[in-house]
Length: 290
Image (cartoon, rainbow, N blue to C red; front, side, top):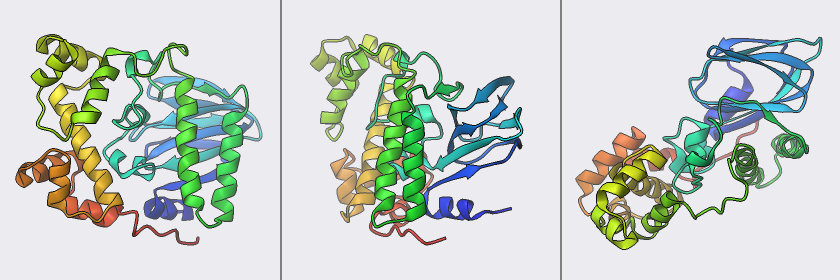
């Protein structure tokens, strides 16, 4: 059965509600879900793993990840916060996991420093910050005061970053000090130029072969693929946030050949630039009442 939350999610890319069900059968979905237990205990299962979840615990479920839960107490409730990555920013449209979102070009955290995959663990809300944030999200979503979706967007980002902190390997590690961070800083400043792996290697005093190998190891993607991804993500942002012509945007992110830009854009987003702009332009977003 399609609920009002499903409708709102489709139109606004975000929804949040309290779920009182004591049993949810095995299922999967085409969005990211954060579930927070506010009452009782249950056995949560995904894949071949099962774990006890109780009041103050929460979890993140990726796209197409099958999961289920069965309550162990008479009363069981959780807050379901569900959203599409592009709700945070249109450039996150291709992302299909929590790890992809927080490792994105704009939000980048080095995944090598994570203790484990952020989508296969149960988080503990020891200080109550997550519950407080989710409660505020519920209030904003319920009251729908002017600008509520913008406030919700900022709180979702805070929610993800607070969760990221719980799995960061070394809390004393300075963001921006690692090998990949040095390369990414260079790319952020030069992605719009006609740069090559050799250019970056020479600038950072690495051999091309070492930079290529190290980059792939730390980020799980080749240098050239990452450069393409960064350029297309920036073009998505410009398409959604500005009225600039598409050929001007292509040139601004580093593609003088418009055909190459169109081909790469479609390979990353499964959409043409024009269709992407039409469906993601922030100037056209509306927040209908339920």
